[in-house]
Image (tube, rainbow, N blue to C red; front, side, top):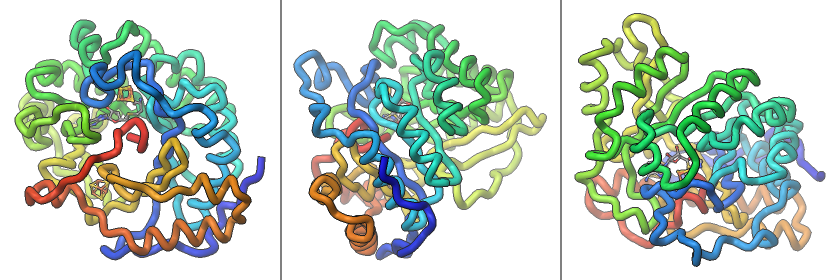
Length: 343
Ligand code: SAM
Ligand code: SF4
Ligand code: SF4
C-alpha cells in the first residue's frame, strides 16, 4: 500500500471564513444494513436502489493514500463513517493504513450491529475509539427508527464488545425526533450514565433530499438539556472549542452529555471539517450539492504534491455555512445524501 507521510508539508487554508482544515470524515461505503428513515428511507433506498458499483468506490489503498494527503495538509483527526462502515470487509486494512500514517486521532461511527464481529480486529489494526448510534432502548422504537430486522440486543452486544476490546471512550449518538423517540430520552441518558458512555444528542437535520425533514420534527438542544436537567442536574457548559458538541458534565460526576445543535445554534464559524465521499469526491460541507473529484487524478497517476494542491486550492475557496444560511431562510440546492458524503 502506498501512503504519504502524515507530517504536514503544505498546510491547507485558512478558507475564506478563516477556518483551517483540521478533521476529515471519510465515507467508506454508501451501503447500510439499516434503513433509518431520517437518513436512508426505504422509499428511496429500497430494493431497486442502485448503490455505487464497487469498482467506482475508493479501494483501501486509495482511501489511505488520500487520508495521508489530508494529514499532510494539517488534518489531525480522521473519522470513518458511511453508510455503515462495518459492511466493508477491508475496514481493518483501512484503519491499519491510517494508523501507520501517524494520524493522532482515528475514530469510527457505526450503527453497532456488527461490532461484536469486528471490535478486536479493529483495535488490533489501530482504531482507538468508537461512536455507536443508538436512538432508543425501547425495542419497538429502535426497530421503527432503524427499519431493519436487526434487533436492539445486537447493538447493545456490539457496545459491550467495543468495551471488552478497549475501544474507549465509547460515545453514543442519538438523533432526537419529535414524537418518535423523545419520550425515551431519559432512559437513554440513564443507560449512558450507568454504562459510562458519552451520550451525544443530535438535532434532527435536513441532510440529503429524501428524509422529508420538517422544522417541527426537531427537538432543540435547549429543550433536550431542559428535560435532562429536571432529572439529572448538569453543570455549566464545558468549554471545548475543538468539539462540535456542546458538552455538560453531570453535577454528580457521572460523565457528561453533549448536544449537537446544527439547527438551533449552528457552529459553521468553527467548522474545520472536510469530507471524502465514497466515490472519492471532496466535499467541504455536510450539506454540499457538489464535490470535486480526487479519484480521477488519483487513478491517473497524480503524485502526492498534485493531490495536496487540488485539496488545498479547493479549501482556500471554501465559504460553506449552510446551517447559518438555513437559519436565515436562504439555503437551497439538491443536497448529496448523508450516506454518500459521510455522516
Ligand atoms: N451508519 C453509521 C451510524 O449510523 O452510526 C455511520 C453513518 S451515519 C450517517 C452517521 C451519523 O449520522 C449517525 O449517528 C446518524 O444518527 C446521524 N444522522 C443520520 N441522519 C441524520 C439526520 N437526518 N439528522 C441528524 N443526524 C443524522
Ligand atoms: Fe445506516 Fe447510519 Fe444512515 Fe442509519 S444513520 S441508515 S445506520 S448510515
Ligand atoms: Fe460545517 Fe457545513 Fe455543517 Fe456549517 S453546515 S457546520 S459549514 S458542515
